[in-house]
Image (cartoon, rainbow, N blue to C red):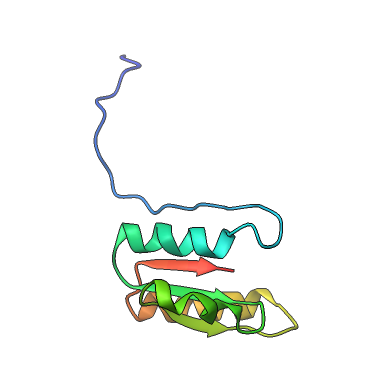
Length: 92
Protein backbone atom coordinates (compact mmCIF):
# COMPACT_ATOMS: atom_id res chain seq x y z
CA UNK A 1 0.00 0.00 0.00
CA UNK A 2 1.37 3.40 -1.01
CA UNK A 3 1.10 6.46 1.25
CA UNK A 4 1.44 8.75 -1.74
CA UNK A 5 -1.44 10.17 -3.73
CA UNK A 6 -1.22 12.02 -6.99
CA UNK A 7 -2.10 15.70 -6.44
CA UNK A 8 -5.20 16.78 -8.33
CA UNK A 9 -6.73 20.21 -8.60
CA UNK A 10 -10.16 20.46 -7.01
CA UNK A 11 -12.66 23.28 -6.73
CA UNK A 12 -12.82 24.83 -3.27
CA UNK A 13 -14.40 27.91 -1.73
CA UNK A 14 -12.20 30.45 0.00
CA UNK A 15 -13.05 31.17 3.63
CA UNK A 16 -11.07 34.14 4.84
CA UNK A 17 -11.21 36.06 8.10
CA UNK A 18 -9.87 39.60 8.37
CA UNK A 19 -9.26 40.96 11.86
CA UNK A 20 -8.08 44.45 12.75
CA UNK A 21 -9.08 47.43 14.90
CA UNK A 22 -11.99 49.65 13.97
CA UNK A 23 -11.15 51.88 11.02
CA UNK A 24 -8.21 49.76 9.81
CA UNK A 25 -9.80 48.97 6.44
CA UNK A 26 -11.34 45.51 6.86
CA UNK A 27 -14.43 46.22 4.73
CA UNK A 28 -12.38 48.02 2.08
CA UNK A 29 -9.89 45.15 1.93
CA UNK A 30 -12.62 42.51 1.75
CA UNK A 31 -14.30 44.35 -1.13
CA UNK A 32 -11.04 44.79 -3.04
CA UNK A 33 -10.27 41.09 -2.67
CA UNK A 34 -13.79 40.19 -3.79
CA UNK A 35 -13.60 42.44 -6.86
CA UNK A 36 -10.22 40.90 -7.71
CA UNK A 37 -11.71 37.39 -7.64
CA UNK A 38 -14.49 38.41 -10.04
CA UNK A 39 -18.16 37.57 -10.13
CA UNK A 40 -21.10 39.03 -8.26
CA UNK A 41 -20.29 40.40 -4.81
CA UNK A 42 -22.74 40.57 -1.91
CA UNK A 43 -22.15 42.16 1.47
CA UNK A 44 -24.07 41.38 4.67
CA UNK A 45 -24.02 44.63 6.64
CA UNK A 46 -24.48 44.61 10.42
CA UNK A 47 -23.15 48.13 10.95
CA UNK A 48 -26.21 50.32 10.31
CA UNK A 49 -25.69 50.93 6.60
CA UNK A 50 -21.91 51.34 6.57
CA UNK A 51 -21.73 48.72 3.84
CA UNK A 52 -22.87 51.36 1.36
CA UNK A 53 -19.89 53.63 2.07
CA UNK A 54 -17.69 51.91 -0.51
CA UNK A 55 -20.09 51.98 -3.49
CA UNK A 56 -17.56 54.07 -5.43
CA UNK A 57 -15.11 51.11 -5.47
CA UNK A 58 -17.23 48.81 -7.61
CA UNK A 59 -20.57 47.11 -8.01
CA UNK A 60 -21.94 45.05 -5.13
CA UNK A 61 -25.22 44.49 -3.35
CA UNK A 62 -26.00 44.78 0.35
CA UNK A 63 -28.34 42.96 2.73
CA UNK A 64 -28.67 44.84 6.01
CA UNK A 65 -29.21 42.91 9.24
CA UNK A 66 -30.35 44.65 12.42
CA UNK A 67 -30.22 43.56 16.05
CA UNK A 68 -30.91 41.09 17.48
CA UNK A 69 -28.18 39.33 15.48
CA UNK A 70 -29.27 35.71 15.24
CA UNK A 71 -27.85 32.76 13.38
CA UNK A 72 -31.14 32.53 11.48
CA UNK A 73 -30.75 36.07 10.11
CA UNK A 74 -27.21 35.38 8.89
CA UNK A 75 -28.25 32.04 7.39
CA UNK A 76 -31.20 33.64 5.58
CA UNK A 77 -28.98 36.36 4.10
CA UNK A 78 -26.31 33.86 3.01
CA UNK A 79 -28.90 31.62 1.35
CA UNK A 80 -30.46 34.62 -0.42
CA UNK A 81 -27.10 35.56 -1.95
CA UNK A 82 -26.35 31.93 -2.86
CA UNK A 83 -29.72 31.46 -4.56
CA UNK A 84 -29.22 34.68 -6.52
CA UNK A 85 -25.90 33.41 -7.90
CA UNK A 86 -23.41 35.54 -5.99
CA UNK A 87 -19.88 34.16 -6.13
CA UNK A 88 -18.57 36.13 -3.13
CA UNK A 89 -20.34 36.92 0.13
CA UNK A 90 -18.78 39.30 2.66
CA UNK A 91 -20.11 39.20 6.21
CA UNK A 92 -19.29 42.54 7.80
